[in-house]
Length: 161
Length: 286
Image (cartoon, rainbow over all chains, first blue to last red; front, side):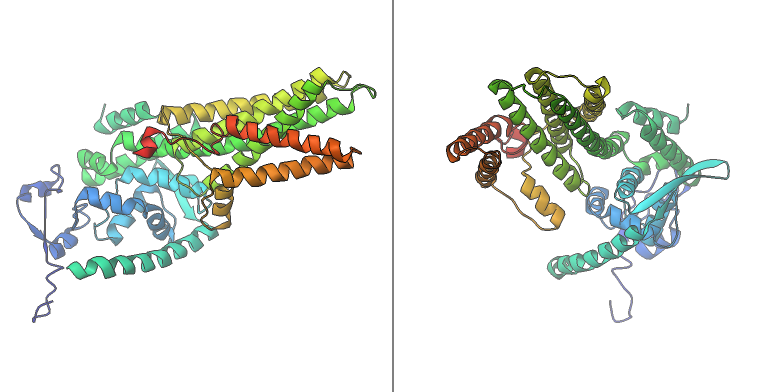
């Protein structure tokens, strides 16, 4: 923060190379966006991330199941809805390949943390996932563990910034 | 054919799994990509979805672990069924028949190896429930099940060869019939595991490590630390069994010594295949 109170970290310039070229926004592909502007444009711009996509994917992989449980806490949802919830809540920072949600959801189902059933809506057949009681408790456990873990990492890495 | 169809075709080609779980995945992916294409365009939707090959592999790892665990449950029923058939044959044997020593040793040895393999498989299956399975682990679990079933069938064969007698065919055949279903289940799970990793590294999973993981703490045992107490317990059990069977101290001592020799022999010759000890493969060393 500077004297005017502006948060420079929030306005840090972020690369636009990840902009989808099929978008209309591809017209501005050579423009660099501020984070606040990028977030305002979200969800039109997916995966505008502070880190590279590869790093992001690797970081998320170990936490994907906890994130999915958290995304199901409020209400049930199908795979696509869950991917959109994760993207919206993270401000576009979670660059997880959306296809990887399905093996993770099947694993959560095997562990008894979620249940699923087919539903038909708007002429589409969707598999709806719901959190079980055990899943709710697991989501709380994952949140507690993440808090401890992230605080530890922040104490080590945060000092470098 | 649209780009989504092309992607799904690629995914279908990458999948080795057939049946309901495959159909479910493909339907879910199609719905996802259709909605995502409507929102972001087809090209972007496919890019965001990730690689078909990676998705197929992650999905099949999950299926392989599930199949191996299911095969363990069926194998347990199969081994118990074969045990029941063997007991039915023993009970139906002629009262004055005495088994030749060789078949008696085969019977007791095979029964113990079968039981131990099944216990190892059950412990591993329970521990794998919360793990991210690897093809090598799934292959080991299948191998333990195969040994449990194979030696169970050897047990009933030894009974049939050793003691003459007559009983209803269904009593003799029901156990092996369930075992045959279990063998099919094990082969199916093992085939998928081998497709995911044709040359899996040697996996060592001592039972106490799995038991400790189930109890919620970390424990890494050394193979010798497993062998010594196992041999002592086996000797004590054999000595007690023979003593209760009106054997003299000397006879019970011989039984304990034979038991110890069988346990060590089984550990040396079958231990590696059962994941109790082993030399690390080049991939593990790397």
